Amino acid sequence: MVIYNLVCKKNHSFEGWFPSYEDYQKQADKKLISCPTCGSSKVEKVPHACAVHVKKEQAPAPAKKTEKTPPAPPSPTEFKEMLIQVHHYIKQNFEDVGSRFAEEAREIHNKKAEERPIHGTATALEAKELSEEGVPFIALPKPELDS
Image 1 (cartoon, rainbow, N blue to C red):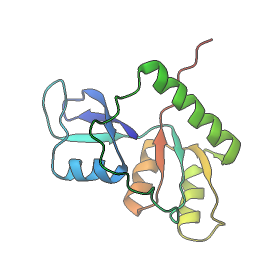
Image 2 (cartoon, rainbow, N blue to C red):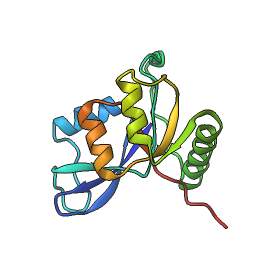
Image 3 (cartoon, one colour):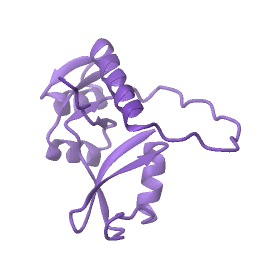
């Protein structure tokens, strides 16, 4: 499941949940995503502060047999717990490159640096440039933690 923060041409913000990045792209290209507030189909993704580089060679998950009923989306509490677990996994298994994320991701993509899992931060402009260059990455929202 991929969750994107989206914004419409009237600057209404909302979340979009998609099975994969490819499904988001297909829906966006066909203008099937619309703002729940005003109905506008001119919608864009908003970059997140945290991003993760994923390996290109990872095989896609095997296709499941058709299910009769799709699983219910997680509750806000379940989603928060899953997000915390993802961030914990990333901190344990990915190299933190901090604000050099865009530079490192670009070098890995261009085979000028060793391929390895990295995480860090990128500005909105850097994320846009990486996307335009075809550098694979995914932006994750940071979980809000209770005191």
